[in-house]
Image (cartoon, rainbow, N blue to C red):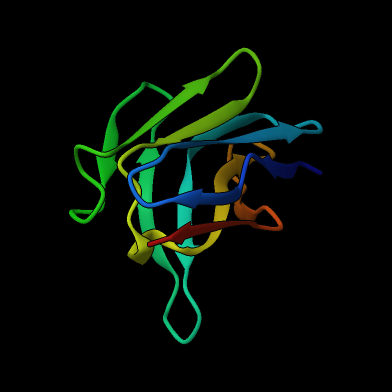
Length: 120
């Protein structure tokens, strides 16, 4: 079983930066897309950024130009650089990954979440 462990959240002032990291541990046939979602209190979980195994990326419109996602396939890690943070970026950020355990069986798995709080 693969597990995702996030790190790097915290409290930062508006305009500041943070870097989130997520490491996948455990055995799998392969790990496909990895990325980040976030959920603010009283709101639905939303996609922030995703990156495929080949390196293609996609971002929510609200974070384009401010956030950058990257991954290290050898280390099974995905990182999210958050720049020019705004109070509306405050949320719990969750790492996710599509994990193939065999050639035919895949699951979406989630990390436990890391809190990002941006003060105005």
